[in-house]
Image (cartoon, rainbow, N blue to C red; front, top):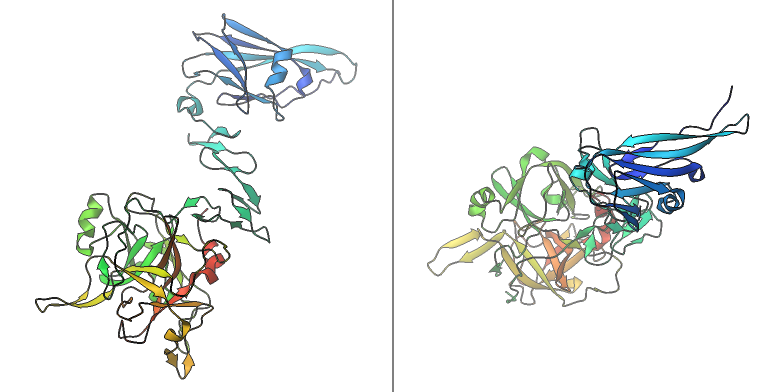
Amino acid sequence: MTLYSTEPQIIQNGNIICVPINVTSLKAIVINVSSSVDQITLKSIDGRIVNRLTPRGYLYIQLSISLLLFDSQKCFQIDLDLSNVTGHIQFIYKLESIESNTNTIQNHSISFPINDPCTTRRIKCKNGGRCQVSSNGQTKCLCPENVTGTDCESIGVRCSDLICINQANCSSDNRSCVCQLGNQGRDCSTRCGESYIQPNISSDRIINGETVVKNSWPYIVYIQIGERSWCGGSLIDSWNVLTAAHCTYGRHTHEFILWFGVHKLDERINEMNMGIVEKRSIQQIINHPNYTIYPVKTYENDLAILRLSQSVEETAYIRYLCILPPINRIIDIHLDDQVEIIGWGYINKLLSNGTFIRQTNELQQAMIRILPDYDCMEYKIDDQILFQSKYMICAGSKDYKTDSCQGDSGGPLMIKYNSQWYAIGLVSFGSTECAKQGAAGVYTRLSMYYEWIYQYMIP
């Protein structure tokens, strides 16, 4: 019995041809074209054009040319509109006899793909990616090592099971990505803190705040419990909203309704029908594991993540907010820095006609400042000071007339850098009498919880 080396199994995926055999046994390639085609372009996998050929019924490619086509995985590309061309590719190769030390020339053919989804949809995978068709006919790009993205458009560095992109680095333990400022997400793929409509920051006067320019704060989320206005939040990626744990503790997912892209509360239904506003329920409440109200509510670790039941994609009216990393040498938070708060909370405003407005219908904003810790030391329970500077930020106006209030809880405390906005805190607690003389607002310091937040973000 004469034994021969294994016959090659030619792998075909769109216009990518792979020959998983020793390339030296391949003698030639013959391309037979049954229908009219002006030109066939032969490329290596990295896109380098090896040759452009005009067929005359069939094309015979010598071994010397075919060797140039192969990458380390023995694959090459034939670039033509396969949806309009029929034919087959014939591979002529040499089989060696193991027993008698003889050889024979044989061939193996594959047909041009007809109506191949990768070709007919003109899927272009970048950076050496390859189009793959799933069993249900869907196409996707399979990316090489350290490449990611829908079209394999992003080259990054591998950190554990993640590919970190946008010039990100690995953390010291190599388990997570360290993003450059302006990008976030587990793989640093999300651009954040940007707005198509710029806010008008014009006053130091939300209590004694001002109505915002419509859709200039596209990161803010309006949170309802049933029909009640409840809290604020920040959209940090397509699936997650950051808010305060005292807004969510003891609650159930079915109680929450979240609104995105809202300006006036009484117009949100109409604007949802216009495609401006989005509405979502939630599938999960993730309170910080160390937040508790027993034996007393101290507001330590006052933050939570609400996981949406359906993702929210970015639009002109809905964007993701940046979270300031704990270690950065570019943005430092200093005493007296100007920061911004926004929300639909109580405004306790007396109009000139004598009408008293408790809660606002339009989104409000106010510029306040980072204040000394002692301005927040009056909050106590059983003589225990609640304010902890390591985990909390003290902020308000110098005259104490501008403040966040009930209904603003969970909303962001933000600082601006290079036209992007970063959340440095979220509304936690303060005096029951908002804008009380001598009492500032207390905000959860988000930089202390950066890694906890990031573990839940969607790559």
